[in-house]
Length: 311
Image (cartoon, rainbow, N blue to C red; front, side):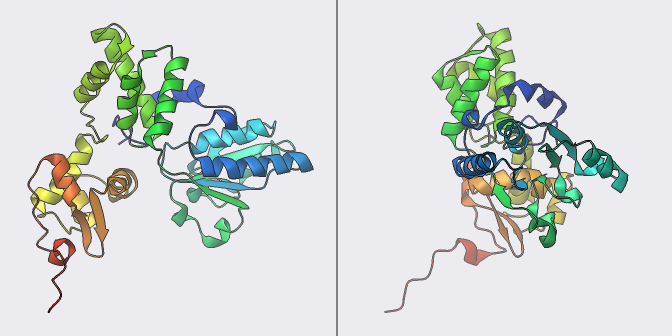
């Protein structure tokens, strides 16, 4: 799934995004509520000349949890040590990391739901035991970005990459980025390639549309995998409801991939609904795919208009 252009998971190429990461809180775009709370937390710790309280960042992948951890270290004038839950298999692995830390250093542990420890980031906060969650003095959820914030991110990244882009081209990339900065930067690089080969190197609306259409990323940021999921629910299961295990088998995907990677954005758009009996494709999904809407026979009450009150 990381091979998908619009996958929020980090791929090999995304390591090139290091130079695109903001280094200070003032440079970090979006997540205004989280930023303001962090700003107070950081300033208070600096005024008291104390180490920052433990921080837990959670939310869908690609929204900036790692970037915020780097910013926290920079703002505190501290070094940061980075690892991940799966990389720590034995107590000795963690002990060697902890003994190498200096006073005030920041330890960032990604995929912390895979490890019992004290500070980190996760896409699945529900996988953390409640006693572990309670150990964190500050817990922040990162939400999908709106188009305005993504436009600023695309403009900033284009400047760093020395890519000429007009406002319409910028807006089109932001519109199809699924509310995720990582995807916005990935799309920008692919549109840049197209502009250099097929155009004059400048990203305009026409160039962005042509490039993204060629990459099969549609106007709402859906790719072929997303459309396959929705079409399976509609064509194979009459619009649903269908259990996630059955759905996963029908499109040859893992249940975890559907739940953690595919569903969140489709739910955000209102194209998919979770019900006690399974997944259901909504009217919006039919309209987006250009298919005539058929109320789900398995759940007639979900789509019918309420009856008129008796006189």
